[in-house]
Image (cartoon, rainbow, N blue to C red):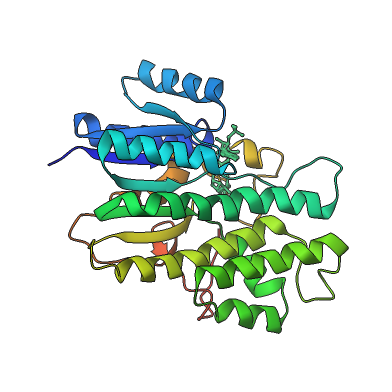
Amino acid sequence: MSLQVAVVTGANKGIGLEIVRSLCRHFGQDGVVYLTARNEGRGLAAVELLQKEGHNPRFHLLDVTDQRSIDTLRDHLEKEHGGLDVLINNAGIGTPKENISLYEKSSRVMNTNFFGLLNVCRSLFPLVRSCGRIVNMASTTGSMVFRGQINDDVRNRFRQVKEEQDVADLMNEFLECCKTECNTERGWCEWSYGVGKLGVILLSKIQADRISQDDSRHGILLNSCCPGFVLTDMTSDLQDNNFGGIRVSTVEGADTPVFLALLPSKATEPNGKFLLRRKEYDFVNTDVLMQI
Ligand SMILES: NC(=O)c1ccc[n+]([C@@H]2O[C@H](COP(=O)([O-])OP(=O)(O)OC[C@H]3O[C@@H](n4cnc5c(N)ncnc54)[C@H](OP(=O)(O)O)[C@@H]3O)[C@@H](O)[C@H]2O)c1
């Protein structure tokens, strides 16, 4: 078996760090796992922590909001390895706590959680080899927004998306509403985090369909998932039962993304699906009950 190459974004702490730990354990000498982070000091400290545990991740700088940073990583991967086998788009931020406008908060969230992820995908997808695995970290908050926080018109437009650009257009429409704070009047909510994650879920389905149609590569599986309600810096100010479910450890949070990243090479499913605790949920087309 040739050396497997994996990249995890936003991996210096939280769920991303746990994913790197788990992938290092799985691949051992047969793989190279890139722990990427937007801050060199925090990234190298995380690598050192894992090295003390006997793992051997490699570090590369990556700020998902900076196209030059994305391109630098892409060029490095191409030169060093000629391709990529596992990509986990984990980097994300919660709603900023600063006293800034709704538009400023929402732009930051969208630029990282949706457009950052989209730009990483656009740059790195051409490198993903046959039987590669791509995991986009979404959230059950996307389903909460879809079901309870947007009106029928916006919901139907989410249902009808066919191209990546259709999803990007909806994200931009949301941001336009935030500028004038007319979200409710226009059928939206103000929860940029949930809207961005809904975008990631729908984007993932479209990306999976597109990649499946690419005859030059075969067997690539791309899915989105929710890690559950996980105790990390992102959620540390929330109550344990904030979303009506139990908050779990990063080990449990990393389980589903790692499961998707390590689907056997002969697997043909799941693809384009949204999973929570290893189970698929099509909340867009069915009334399935979901509990984070
Ligand atoms: N925790 C939960 O309950 C939960 C639930 C559903 C979904 N998720 C999703 O799971 C993912 C991981 O979240 P977490 O809970 O582990 O959060 P976390 O502990 O706050 O970690 C987030 C990571 O993303 C990085 N990041 C932020 N902006 C970035 C950028 N522009 N470029 C590169 N990296 C960036 C952070 O780096 P810095 O240290 O430099 O800030 C950090 O490493 C996120 O996508 C989150 O939305 C989490």
